Amino acid sequence: MKFVDEARIKVAAGDGGNGCASFRREKYIPKGGPDGGDGGNGGSVYLVADSGLNTLVDFRTRRMHKAERGQNGMGRERSGRKGRDLLVRVPVGTRVLEDETGELLGELLEHRQRLLVAQGGERGIGNVHFKSSTNRTPRQFTNGTPGERRELLLELILLADVGLLGMPNAGKSSLISHISSARPKIADYPFTTLYPNLGVVSLGRDRSFVVADIPGVIEGAAEGAGLGLQFLKHLSRTRLLLHLVDIAPLDSAVDTAAEVKKIEQELVRYSAELAGKERWLVLNKKDLLPQEAFDERRRALLQALKWEGAVYGISAVTGEGLDGLTGDLMGRLEAIWQAERSLDEKTEEEPWDPLRG
Image 1 (spheres, rainbow, N blue to C red):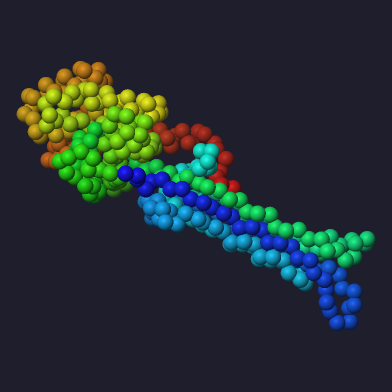
Image 2: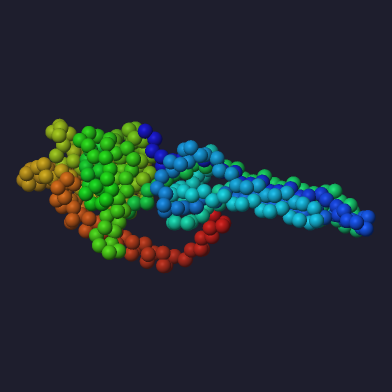
């Protein structure tokens, strides 16, 4: 099944209006001179980020987006009106690429941010500009230039702070439904999550973060197996990954360590940057095991993985261990955000100009 975070659209800027070849026609002025006005510039096409949108589904039915053409010039040195710019609303977090070449044109990461994707055509000039002492009745004028036309690929990358990663039925949907107001589909069979879900985890005033529930990853996902590599894209902007593991699988023959390693391999195949993100191991369904059995499986798993990172034991159903997990996540994210702000203060960058894209 194809998720609607990708859309292909066509954009066309308006053509510039043509210049006018005209001459004055007034009573008692038998030899009126040229008075043809200029055309108007064509309208441009901008993509504008809107925090009120969260999918690209509307672009599946409306693919063509065209700005207004510039008006032609007129007599009496009247210029044509400029074509209106077209503002196309897209969700915050949209990446814009040239469909044919794959060239990245820009990313819209903030509300009301603009990106110029098709420049309007230049206006034509009227014959009034061609008059001279040797050419008193010029009939020359120029046509407006065509506006840019492009085929674009839009990709919506979810803007989440924490990404949930794990095999199908590891309990990701149950976790996000318990710690946030998100209500994804939950069932006792794999692949119940077909679309990424976002949830806001609030730990008090001005202390919250966004977590993304990603459809289960299987072996070969980086090459498009299962639900495809497109879902791995949704982890690319997260600051931290939670790797959920079913510590009490129904099939006792399942090698839990091997399942973890399969996902690690898919991350490496897809992107070295993604594989290098900070990742915490979360052992879910703790409530299904006696404490001694849980401790034994935990020890064996960490030993097999040679795991040195953070480890948590939780139950996404009963809520056991979730307060400690979310509290530690909040503290770690606040430290990351503070480090990013400090880096931004040290790095001087040219201010972004929305009209320049």
